[in-house]
View 1 (cartoon, rainbow, N blue to C red):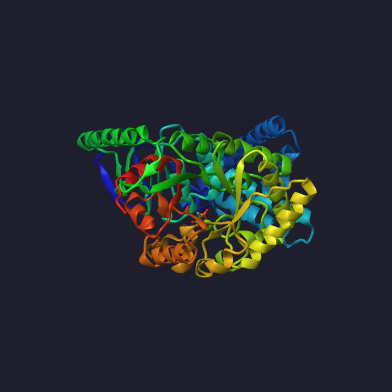
View 2: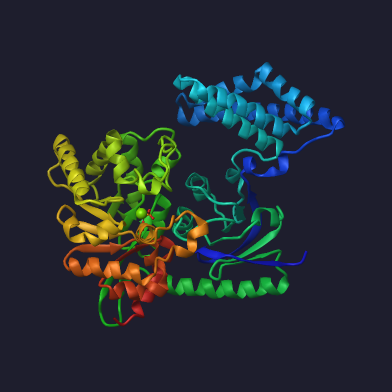
Length: 540
Ligand code: PEP
Ligand code: MG
């Protein structure tokens, strides 16, 4: 097959080669939804019956494994799905539809299950609304099965393959994090999106902005990803492969060189010491960060502790997970952010349906004030953790000093109940224009600032960081952003300020950040050796 080159944009740098692993959302791909002729009716009915049998088997397996691993009532959900699935009248409705309307099994399933979903949704009782969700889940499983796709596609991703997908949702990254993909290529994904920063966090080379990609790649084809240049080569020929191997070996050497000195501190040519910390989300990140010379955890994004749960963890469970992630950095300063949910980071148990403009709505600390139980559980767990770690707490999406005051007083109340007399430092994410422009007032109730250039860019440029169609407005290295950074620094020369947005991980922009007067950076673990090396070559 002739090689094909596609050009996109870099979400996370690096090089990779591997077999393509295609991840489709079946409900959005038309392949399974088609009209049929009369002589295909029996075949489609047989396909439907086969899918029912397959999904029933899957549900039994799931119920058994959930019961064993989680030991709670979750397995009941799968048992209930089995019962719905075996319901004779539902099956008959699907068969009738195939026969009378001459449509494919998947089309019939989608229509019948949708009708039931709507009926349940229209009923008032909570239990009926849950049934509506059950119907959607089941139709998805059946259509997956009809399309020949078995289980959550990413669970099956073989190590070393290149993931090919339309886009990555935060919940997908949970599964992906445990798998060792070589790289990822996406149809859609903004430079400031969470898929992008997740990829950078785990050092996964990733290119996005490749229109129609999923239908262009052959399932078992070889994909070469040059994420440094935003280029993807499908079915590379011999000469492309050998050029790639050369580049990869140069890369590996450069990384080893930077890694050799990673444990040493980063001092500029003229003797200014810069602290380089890590952005982490799970225990592997922190272990990797320390190994790469991180001088602490500058930003622990706690969202991942909530993304795969149907209800929030209680204080004990939360404490255990936080501790596990921070343990590799036990002797170092750690900055843990309160849950930053909402907008681009919706959670399974969050009702976000009512907001027309979620990025400007109840996200971050605004959401937490609306969910006092959730906030108080986090404060309790963090206070307990502060007796073991050099812990700092970061408040996300702050716009007003009064929000910091409110968190501070809640923290003091919780500490009193726990008999903890030394409170951890409490700081604000400076990631909204109001917080940056009002930094002086914000410094009253805040002990430190973490400059989040990702959201700051989103709000300064009025551009949704998750929307690829406006990605060309997402300019996180624009003079406007540097001007704000410099201004915050000049307004508060003695404040502890770090930059923890993605900007801190671009070698080409490090000097400009330092010239704004910033002396602490926090970035993805995989990027730390290179950033430290870059700093050592700078003369301020
Ligand atoms: C930021 O907004 O720059 C930031 C560090 O937070 P997040 O990317 O998690 O929103
Ligand atoms: Mg942010």
